[in-house]
Image 1 (spheres, rainbow, N blue to C red):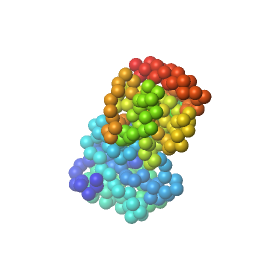
Image 2: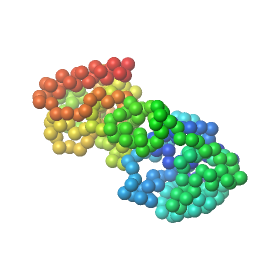
Image 3: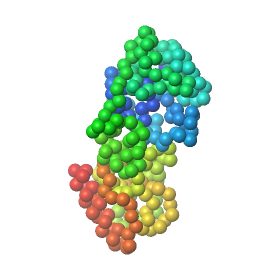
Length: 284
């Protein structure tokens, strides 16, 4: 957190970095410190427009550590901080608190009251060097958190991974379900999606759960009419372990089909066998 930092020569990458996608990774490249905000600024400035996120702060922290970032500085974003002028942000945060010698931002980065600060203002400050990173494109499309959120919601996790630079992931505590999967011969580890985060659209996916090949259903189990909320059910292929109460990470590789209601349990089981075999091929 910011209060725990002391000024020293730093190369600082600044941004929200939701998803830590390929564009973010380019902004962060060469920086030893990442400066980000919690919660997402829109939660404070325009709550009605605040998006569901790709990554929680814990997930973001882990992804940045995997990139080799030495230090993550998190600014608590509240109304008082939002009312700072751009000059105050530069003076108080970048210079006085962090001692920034190099600052890296994306070309669309905005900061300060009413988002009135921009990269040009940073570049005009002679107290540090400013690196302005152009928007990154993949297959002719700009990489952005909002676009990736839309892809995940549509179930297009394979394409989302190309923008993220890694499979989209969910994580959470394994909870007890109705044990329907075990009765059908496909015992599952179940996660309740975090309502603050994006969840893939309803359907069946090839995935990895804690590194193990898994067929995953996201949805409400229409064949049984349970009336329960959305659940993420992971059938770990060729392994049967008790995961209740443990935190599990699910990485989505490819959408196999949409969720649908079957006329009989036998028809559902037959389809589940096909889903598992296709998942096994895709994971291999």
